[in-house]
Image (cartoon, rainbow over all chains, first blue to last red; front, side):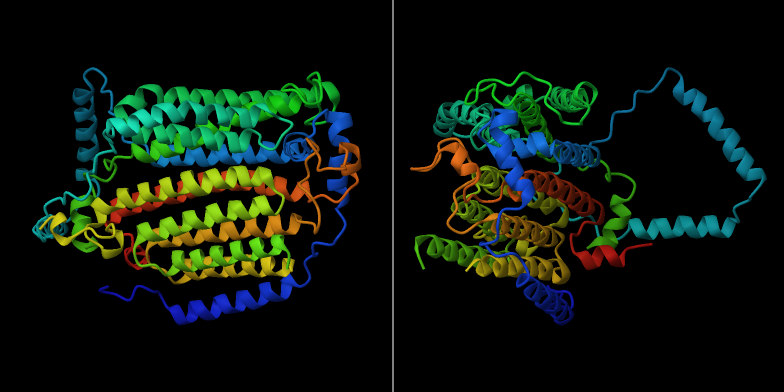
Amino acid sequence: MARADLHRPKLGLLLVAAVATCLGAAVFTLPRDGAPLPAVARYAMEVAIPKWHTTEPVNEIVYGTRGFDTFGETFLLLAAVVGVVVISRSKERRRTVLLEDVLASEEQLGLRGGRARGGQKSPESAAAEQEERADDSAGPPREPHSRVGSREPERATAMTVVVRGGIRAVAPVLAVAGIYLAAWGYSPGGGFPAGAVLTGVVLLAYVAYGHRAVSRIVRRNTLENLEMLGAAAIIGLEVAGLVLKGSFSANVLPLGQVQTIRSGGLLQAFSASELIEVSTGLTLVIFAFLSMGSDWTEEESHDDEHGRGR
Amino acid sequence: MNLFWSIDIACLVVILVCAVLVVFLENLNASVMALSAVGTVLSLLFVVLHAPDVAHSEVVVGAIALPALYLLAIGKTRPHVGERPELSEIGETRDQGDE
Amino acid sequence: MILFNYFAAAALFCLGLYAVITRRNLIKIVLGLSLMESSTYLLMVSLAYRSGSTAPLLVNPPKGQTPSSLVHGNVADPVLQNFCLTAVIIGVAVTGVFLTVVVRIAQHYNSIDADDIRAMRG
């Protein structure tokens, strides 16, 4: 490495050692594994079957008793997804309006005319700026773009027929397993892991079939609309509890038989919309990341920054 | 030291070794794989610690989502940062690069 | 015995912190952050564990126990597991945001070395 790969390791080590001693001291005060179950956990266990007709207390907590916490987490996930989509978006092609260049030129003339009459830029500074820009561009010629990676958004090609065949057999099974995780509300699972499994299945299909095949199915705006639909469903469910039953995530839906798909009423509806949220959200994150070109920085700062960047 | 605690300690040792690998490995791809190992063994530990729900999501995240994101990031930064030893795949010989 | 879990979580956290503080490569820093997240998951689930207990499920209880007896029986703590369940998925999305920013920095500054970026401010 030209420069030391670590950045002030001694100081870093000292800081980390200090944090380690504090954590070590704090660990002894943590409750050990013999401690009795806290009251809220015991309440969740007791209330699982009578009130919610579900035999899965963790799901009952995630979507029922502490529904407000999951509500907040879901919109945290939405914020992260919107963040990724916005940062990785490519520049839109500007739709020019008719006669736009004509109108713009007059406006520019007026502006430049104004500046010319008012703050007269001294000729020396203009010349100096010109000269500075000139020698910057005469810097080291841009290294021939290496074949190692292309700048355009990722366009994976499909894999061999063996892999495609295997994936064609496995992907539906995995998708059904993912949906099963969320459908069987009374056993461990729920919207969060099921959504992650579905994202994994989409990734599997993407790797096997390449970008063209998958981009027909995974269209970005349908995913975004689906996600907004899921978020609206969650808001509807939670506010319905507030409106009808007086408390935020109170159960408004009919409670099904104990060990059936519909058992748990609101839990199942919340878990299903959470499944939509997480699967579309994570797929959007990965596909926005994939299709991130580098056209933001292409013109203005790429060449002159290049000299300093190397 | 019944079976439970032996599995628990074994998983912890593997997780810590992989974590050390993540931090001190030179090659980025290798450290991403080490992070994936941490996630997967952590999910096994969650099963042992009676937390099946968390194990479900941790195994998917640790094995599929996180490594995919990291490898994509490495792939995306490589053309802009050019030849850096830690960005190249292991075993990528010199002539593959652009001479 | 559970102390091993707590110490392992603390050690994992410190490793991640060391990576974040001393590494120069931005992707290595994000890897350190992921390690710190994993350590919080480990700590939370280890805190939720109760010795000699079974998972907080009432689906088909272990032999000799009925769902109602399990409600008051010795089970792991479901509330702490609930925190962990959502945190794992949100962690992926947040890591996605970090990595997108890192790639944009790489595109703009042509280098993902933390010191280069700092040197170029202003």
